[in-house]
Amino acid sequence: MSRVPGPQAPRLTTKSAIDAQIAFVLGNPRMSAWLKNALRETLLEDPIVVLNDLEILNLILRSRSELLVAEEYAKHNIP
Image 1: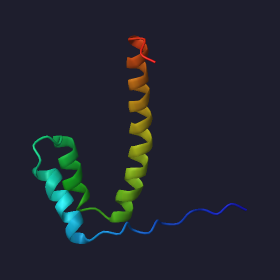
Image 2: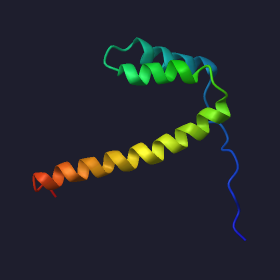
Image 3: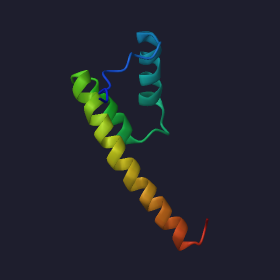
């Protein structure tokens, strides 16, 4: 019988360290507006909803991006 994994233990960090990371992203002009908006909006959401949404977003966008990159490499015969 396989075990369904439960929630992962939070990484060892502090709220101030996380707040510093958030401030860095929001204050960095090289970060995309999309990322900054997503970060601002998710700070107001239920963290369980955010974790679920992140998993779905990661699966979909990672697959799509990997496919697009592979197609681009194939166009230029890059191994």
